[in-house]
Amino acid sequence: MHRSSILLVASFAIVAAAPAAITRTSALKGASGVPAGQVTLTDAPNGVILRVEAQGLTPGWHGLHFHEKADCSDAMFKSAGAHVHMMSPAIHGLLNPQGNDLGDLPNLYVGPDGKGTVELFSPLVAMRDGTSRGNLLDADGSAVVIHAKPDDYMTQPIGGAGDRVACAEIR
Figure 1 (tube, rainbow, N blue to C red):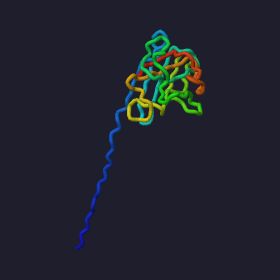
Figure 2 (cartoon, one colour):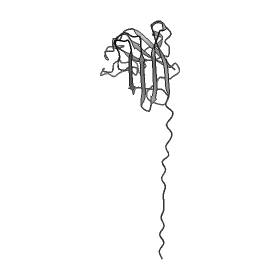
Figure 3 (cartoon, rainbow, N blue to C red):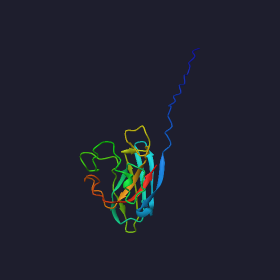
Figure 4 (cartoon, helix red, strand yellow):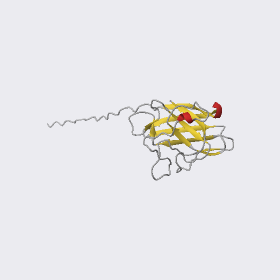
């Protein structure tokens, strides 16, 4: 009598649990500190999802950028610094053939009621260390800034977007 053996091999894949998504929601403030909505950022494996819910703004298109400091303390929001960038000189513009800085984002449209909502993805930044992207949660944080005019995606240094009209600190 011939005996045959059946060998069962179990294969287990060891999968490291993905780190919990980092999410930050911050108040968006307009001129003189007037509430202007909120922004929510969620870290993703290859970038950041940004949701802006704005109110009380002038109807039309507005430039939208990540700025280098979580500081919206002065009336013109200049304390938020320049755009997030990792090289100098920083080249602005999503349509600029010489590249773009890490703070560049598509424009925000605000309707006749002064409200605008956008959800977009930036593959240029992160909300953690250990990536080749700019870390929005570094020691001094960052800010989301809305400008008075649309960004033309080419003109230096900010695409002709004009004054800063709303700001949210990201810590």
